[in-house]
Length: 52
Image (cartoon, rainbow, N blue to C red; front, side):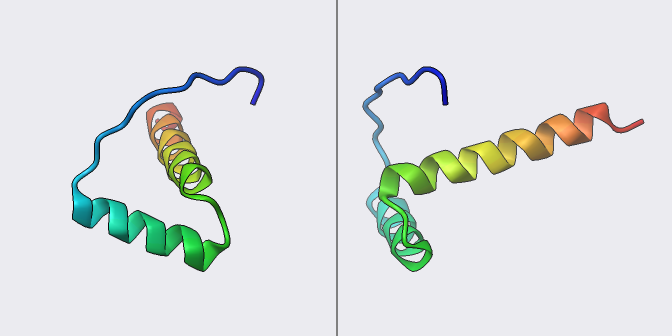
């Protein structure tokens, strides 16, 4: 990650609880979990748009 941007993010409480549990299970911080999931989704979308 070359650059970082700080944002304020509002999440529904149930989504926050779920993400927190997922992060704990993966031994990541909540921030790292969110970034990880967004990067996976971005890569999936990019791969889908590159496929013929």
